[in-house]
Length: 115
Image (cartoon, rainbow, N blue to C red):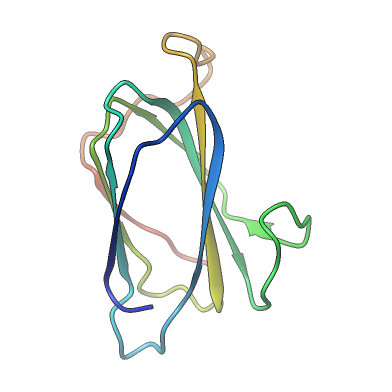
């Protein structure tokens, strides 16, 4: 995967993106430009060393889902991730329906995923 940018309108429900990671010396950044500013929910990340279907239970989930609300850009650096495949799962809820125990939005849109 070289540096990639996807434009997509996140809709209610679950949307997953699965990426094959490039060699360590190539770009490992990913940007999702969300065209649905009303979307709110959680982003979770999972990794695998083999190609799997989105709903396969063999994905290794990275701890710490990230809550989001009205985000336009999701910038991810996957530098340091040793897995061959990364799955980004967006779970979009109805506005105002995120449970109280969810984490608040992070102040910045950029974060690093580490295995």
